[in-house]
Amino acid sequence: MPLPTAGTQPVHYIDQPHLLAPCLQQLAQSNTLAFDLEFDNNRYGYGVTLCLVQVATPQACYVIDPLAGLDLAELYVLFEQPAIQKIVHAPGEDLRLLHSLGCYPKNLFDTEVAARLLNYEQSSLTALLRDKLQFQMDKKQQKSNWLRRPLSDEQVQYAADDVLWLHPLKALLEKEAEERGVLPYVREEQELLSTTIHGNGAKTSFLKPADLLYLSPLEQYITNELLRYRDELARGMGKPAYQVMGEELVRDLVTGKIQAQDIPYETSVHPRYRNGRFATQLAQQLRRLKEAAEDQNLSDDPPGRPRLTPEQHAAIRQAAHDRDHLFAPIQQALVQRFGQHTTVLLLSNKMVNDIVKGAMPLRNLPRYRQQLIREIAGELGLDVGRYE
Image 1 (cartoon, rainbow, N blue to C red):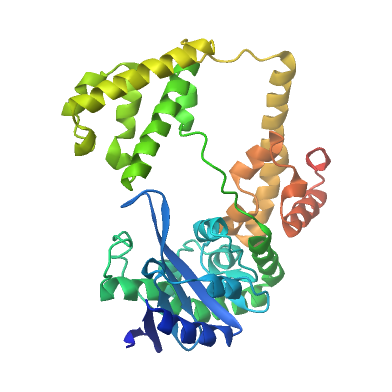
Image 2 (cartoon, helix red, strand yellow; image 1 turned 120 degrees about the vertical axis):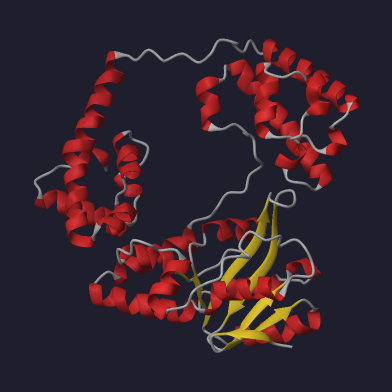
């Protein structure tokens, strides 16, 4: 039975094999699909779990439930068909999840990138649908538990709204991009979505950037291994790691702010482990990790400020000079030509910092961005050759 419609398209909830087969037949007949995913990322369960796949043609929307045991192989084949364009919005995390499942969608059109190239200050889907299509999305269900079944009608409708409006939104943005002369840039950015492969290797570091600044090498090792231990416990329980033991509690154990025997009284520890037996196990684990760190001759001294060579000082001065006198004028010219918000996409301050530090050669940028930077540099009499 179709659920209540959004716009003019019926919304179908697919949770049975006999419903999936005709759904796939309908999708295969369309030359353009819009899709989005709902997934749980360590909020209510362990790991990243695909919970829903929403797919819309211009005529209908299908909310497909992978947790019902459906085989989505044929759907993934459709996503990989170059002849079918797939409309998405800010799909980075969705693509990372699909790549981990062995699906590599092709021929994508990202409405968020198109909006940024059109200098939209707000490029979220909610803002674009409000401003371009006068549709106000209801975000109440955004952080609901997508692992729980049955889903409410409100959850299904919310999921459907993420794709129902992408077809008309794409048409409006594409037309505007053509009128403003940036459609070739939009298309090049879209091509990158199909060729960028997201890695899914096993996680080896659980540390945060601040840990590298404030923890000694010995403390970094113990913290990382204890967080890895917490992750193993979480996997065994099927719970997010934060529900097993608070992350700051782990750091406090490593730095000695609290002791393992205090675990039964810590509210950020899961009730299963809030007992003396686990406190003893944790104390033993900490001792083993400390011994392993000492066997590696890891220092317990806090990180010091590294002493730089004259050459390193000179490189830092050169980078600062080029950031202010080479790339800042190029950024200003981009703002005049395309606008402030588009410039953040084309050549952000972070990109400039990476370029002058040697972490991102200009040749690694999309071709049209390279051409724009070289063109503007030439007009301004600037030489970016050293960063090619």
